[in-house]
Length: 210
Image 1 (cartoon, one colour):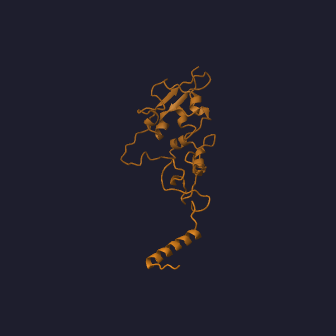
Image 2 (cartoon, helix red, strand yellow; image 1 turned 180 degrees about the horizontal axis):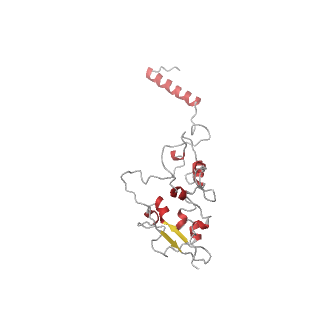
Image 3 (cartoon, rainbow, N blue to C red; image 1 turned 45 degrees about the horizontal axis):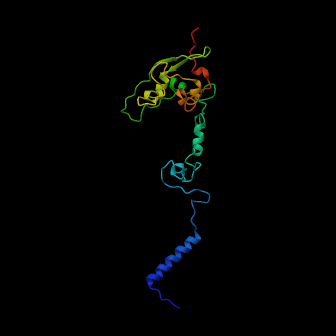
């Protein structure tokens, strides 16, 4: 039995045939190449295929799991000082870590206060607080506001909106070294983005009265 096809029908059949040939010759893959996950253009930290988990070529750079840290950049940032900062020209403490306070005091760095040129700059607060320790053989702590307020504003630690790291009244914080080691009080920064707790005398630098 023979069928006579119209020109329109013949053209449609030809297009379908061409598409079928292309599909067979170039099978679809889930990504650019085998073994790579498909990446979406959604900026969603809960989506493991989001573009925020990709490198500049569009390939997944991290673990592809939104519940875990991503990429080599994250792991490099967990070390105290990435290799880019381990320059011989930077002063170090006795542990070989960059001494940022010394960089400030010697005028080797002078970061801008703000990207906004019209924003007024407040000078660091030159105020030392003596924190008495409970132990008889452990020196007291001299807390220097000046170097801390060089980097931070008051609200960073003394938030007026609740959740303050430190209460602004002597004797009310009841700090302990175990709590600091767990990330409370001074431990919010020290041991993470500021020098670690290994050098006791760096903070416990005020001798007790006899």
